[in-house]
Length: 627
Image (cartoon, rainbow, N blue to C red):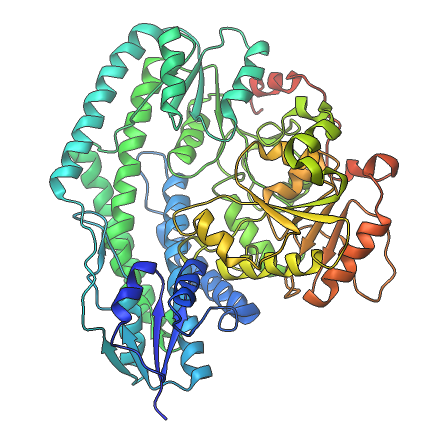
């Protein structure tokens, strides 16, 4: 019997299914919110759990690795003046996410066809997504169409068309003009205030950077913070009015015509080299019969080139700021785009600049995980900043494993992810405040980092479907263990709302969802942290909170730990791993019965944390130059 498959990645696409599907149609949901809505409408559907899995993670990662490393040498000419690493790393960052999306979707389509023995694909009839007059992103429909054509599978279309929103060129033009005017006005103020005067320059005010600067300011002469970008504009504007800081609301991304034309020539040469490489290696660009070369070249021309020109404009704007006055110190919480340029320019000009990562960095023996974290590090900890903050022993080990480390490491202890004053909080009072009558239970705090297909990193992160499945596994296990309560920390985003998330979880009184309040307060108030992969793991260990790593597929272990099995002998530890769903309930039951309060156990927390003091003596090391 003939079977059809239709893939849905957005809730607004579901309306177009009416009249286009029957009992022989298999509807595949690519996201939990879509899966939930399909079930609410009583439309039979599948999610990606049985279509992607371990082999999906491995196949997509290995193929991406091969393609990226083949392309990297072809990007060497992409630079502006002496700045080149920022362009290459930023280009690879965005290109890689797009490549991972294409490979993942291609793999899922193929598995759906094979496992359902389908001979027809149905496409949601919609316009290509257009984010600007120049930038085009291939939508799912075009990938499905290409797969069908290359694999001789019939392709049908929904009768109705879903129109995408298009940003008008005039809006983009006036937005750029407005940002230019504001920048020029602020530059005049900046020049009058900072000419021949020292100041501290920070990339942006995210990830507790203002709190860190307040602490650092007590040890720095002529301390005055200046932010290149701001998220909390109201707070920073109040500070500016009081004369406590200065922030640039906009950093224009348009460069002079000759600079832009020179970069465009280099970008066109890169495209020619890449096109030639793709033509010589046709099998490299294929997954499940789907050839990605056309998609990728189009993305480079219409999206990446625009990003590179914007980066060039930000470089020009940054240099205008630095031409007015040289900062005494520079701090940044990441090195992507402008963040990387800030470090590379500082290195060139001899400005003491420190990169302080807001992420987790641990060495891993698994080659897939090792490569993923290495690539991840290029935009967050391993860059061309003069100095890099080493906040944990794990980060120190990780950096020693990285090739071509340029930055001078400085052991600082945690700067952005840990509030040192909170380690002295009263745990019992905090538990009562947050959990009330539940504070007498053993509380397991769940925090993890799910990724949708547009920002997916295979192996080291869960897919969105895996994230929901894994939490439901934990709920089912905790429900059968008296005296244990699960607190699920959740961050709503554009793809998964709090309402949808709640409805995606099994119904039980053994857990609650928490999306407000300081995350560190929850760490202090809990008995365990449970996670797949997250910065929260290292944060937890800093607060002497034991960690449970849960990975039911058994492929990834963030930190090597005491593995808990349903029939094994176990040792008390700072960190545990549960590597299958079968082992989960026995493991949690054993922990509930055997793991006493960490205050009463002589555990080696020093393996995870530096014995730091509440001072900034390490700042002096930034004044030393390389000999």
